[in-house]
Image (cartoon, rainbow, N blue to C red):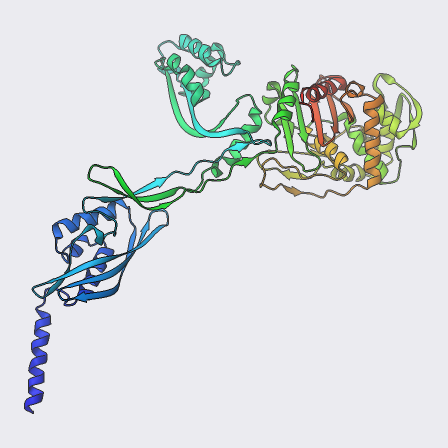
Length: 595
């Protein structure tokens, strides 16, 4: 072996031995890489040992991980600039924080060499370039404002807020009678139906505490001093959507609240701030603004809703009204009085025999099939026999042979029973669908049933259906669709919450313009000289009255439209249809000018 080769092997062995005895990386880039890797691995002690001040570095880096609630750190070294025993190494950090938050930035590590070993000169800038040595990082959440619900004109009807449930546990009270009286006295300001007897009766039935009333935060503040300390009374505070006016469409808003409650939260924002040793914020290093969920806009018109509500509230019987906008399908009002509220959302989904309002469907079927038109002369005797059934007119009135429009105007049962008997089994069902009754409407926020019109191949049954006294059932919503269809010329698509489309299942055949014009002519005659003359002073109103005989009396109906506003009014067992016309008139007279 030559002397040169031997010398090279000895040198290589010495070099390997020197590396093996080294206490760390030999270059500044390698030292920086090792520090960054340990920091990214959440091994803060190993990272600290590669710095000039391990006792300061370890707690500072641990605080960064903890205060940022960090899930992951990716760290990379960049360019290196070396000058003798010092060096500057660029770094880039990307923190992954909770809820998929990502924070990226760049900085520089200052390196130094002592006794042949490179290390990171410790400073808090090794964590973030703007972090001072006596400061810490903190992750902050920025709550997103919750969405609000507003009506057609933009005013709020439901707003985010706190509600207080007033709970009463009779078993935990040392004076149930006295507490019930105190509760009723305090809460009657917000709910006039609350009584001591009612509270005590409900408390006896309840298994434990029951909710006496739900109060908004403002309402709770008004009466809390009277309620706190009552034996057996406790309170539950929770977040909710709170009505701005508890008297505005309460049943409808409750349905809407249930529909949108899970969609009102926006996306929270977040920030990373620096905090000094006194706990005060000193700088914002990163900020992401919250994303507010857009407000929900209802089709409901405050003025129409209030007018309709006022009108139905004047009746002692169950009374309800649905108002639609024919041109758009917007639900302008759903009003029902407290008597109706007891049966649930019946204005939109309750099923009732329609009485003579259904003659609108029968007339549409007759015109569609070419059996009769407005000018076709039909008999209107006091009674008519169809099969084995004798059908009378109200009070056995008779007007002889008259145009169908006059029979419609005077609501002649005998004429329309005969017309219906001459139709085929599917004709009424088809005409009803063309007018909006029968299809299933999934209106977001509003449970609806339009009605049920069965196929009738039986002559007698078809005659009874034709005057709304057979197997046909409709809701006020369904008959409001009839009125809106006549006004618009085709069935509109009803909706309640903007941006939430309505799904419709079932065919809705198109009426011809001739049929629509015929229905409009007849509905106008009803108001000008027929059974709805009471409302003739309320502008150009088109309508149809109806009385549906039921056990214990008869339902009073009135459907129609004025301008771009279609309506259906029902007074359950209200007797004469004139009572439903009166309720509708009360609604129209309560509207501001311009409606």
